[in-house]
Length: 227
Length: 357
Image (tube, rainbow over all chains, first blue to last red):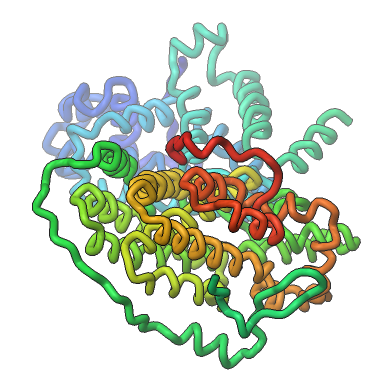
């Protein structure tokens, strides 16, 4: 799948903390929380185990920091997409694009997010870092939920359950980019090539426009596409 | 036969209406919060089930419990500027206004207000049911009836909760209780015996509620209100079934005199409710839309299919149940027909008493 560790180009060398997070993100995305040891992370970055513990006091803290860093990117891009001008439909459309691009940028993101849903046994949710993750998720859902509610109230979107719609959106957006070999076998192409990402955007939008838009708006979008 | 609210009656064309016009009197009725109620409490030492079908209904009631806070998806909006029922033939004002050529926004606003009024009256009715079921728990003679009434107390509390939350969270407006409804509900609450209370609340008002909820659920296009009312409706059907099951035993043991008394009581309540012809509501809302309340009622009465339309809500559950119980006889049938409460020829044999659920 051509995974690569992205480094900050313009600002010179990334800090040790960033290097650790990059390596940990890849490892956790591949094997999950319990499949990765701290020694392995230290080796991947070329640090001793004790220097690693200097940055992150525990594996839970490291894992939560990785998740928080990913989620912060989603939060930032969500804010950009949703605070720019336009009605709820325009913002929803822009947000879908932004989310797909954010997931497509780094294959580890979707995998780690999807895996993190099943890590309940290991993560008690009590540390500061885990609380931060929860707070980001909460803010993220609240702002997307507000946009959806606005669209429903303005008659742009079909009236329905907002939590259910959020669930559906997560499934539709995240699962695809986390599906790895399974997805690539099914689609018979890479999930991350520019053409594949473009195709994914079209498919997601076409499906959502049928399920989310209210009938008058759906008719308008259909006409726009056809003309 | 006693005519309720005799001094509030007058002829409007060929129809005798009941109306309240004195604002002070209406305010006084609404402020009458304390109602002295005769209540005879019965102990029962028979803890085993005596009436199997009532015990089964109690079991169904326990299984049917739901939580108005967590089982309802309150995230679904109920926007004031979107249709939640079809524009015509679901509610009175938007149908009339559409016929008169009013613009869509006016019709939608009228629909919202009429709906807020309807839900508010249902809410006040649910509170009456809550109070009355508390009385039934005390007054009914058998343990099965007490169990069932107690489970209905919890149902009614939930209905008050869910409608009050819907009004507060989604409608943002509440209408006070209509004076005619207040008088009638007080009548039921003041009824001297558990038999009269059961007839009044469980057979008459629960039967009406089943019909009204059924009509809204069928017409509604908003998923939130559809879900709420569908849940309430399932409970109401159980309550109406209790009314029929209990009343079936009551009428089997009743003397001719008692039967006549119950028949008159049922007619007096339904006739008075019907005689108001929604004037309590129309007086509050119709003028805002340039409509004269009396003219609305008169134009409805002038329609050739008036009796058919007017009787729909009664013919749904109440009238068939009263008929099967033998509480509509030749003595009252014609009066029901004249009032537009009973219509057509589709009453089943009164010997069959299927569960009204």
